[in-house]
Length: 307
Image 1 (cartoon, rainbow, N blue to C red):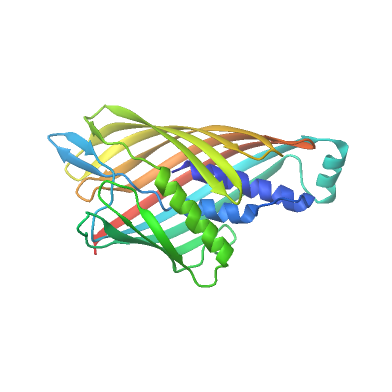
Image 2 (image 1 turned 45 degrees about the horizontal axis):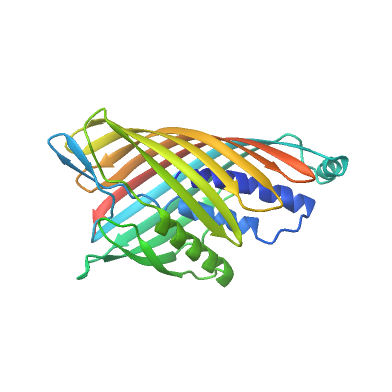
């Protein structure tokens, strides 16, 4: 899930460049950035159980439960431009410093609620966006935006609708379709672990956004370092790759991440989650080349109560 944070960083920079150069693009980069921010608080899907110091890893939400989550991120990134004389002159005329160094941050809060189970074993889930602001205090997703769907203790949520006052219908539809597509592609592993053991999860993901496919590969290693009757504590490491299927641009991105998470055993959910990510991206076109280096600090906490 953390990889979406890196995409936000890149898209923020790329959108700024294209805006200054007045490049004609068939999709809205700003819209893409907002969509990817939405993902960051939509993926707390780790579900565990404990028996005789063996942790039973079984992803899924619990029925009739409330999950209040807070997510924060701060990023530092640098971009170096190169290209023909016309391109470099355009940079100067538009006041773009080469290299460009930018700091960015955002804070997100959501409230997810699950209901009673039906005959098929599924139960309803709603995700409400309480707050989503960027470094300038600007709202990203309107407060009160709601996503509706269904899930079970062993499957990912399947979203079926979105309600948001004041959001453009086109943007609302892009958010809904992208979130729905992402949930449908994610498959959580089921593992039983002893202290000191680890497992690797491969997560290929394709996001169709406004006619552009963003292809990602996320490799995560989870190592159980300790646990007690309440919590399990993991070290996590990640590697990332990213490409965009647009014939106008050649892109190659790669990075690494390290962090930890705290898993609440009785409630089958993560209550603490941190990650430091380093990501490099090269983007080439016929007129210019962009080289991005970024570092991000991610933190997420969850409070759980019964509905």
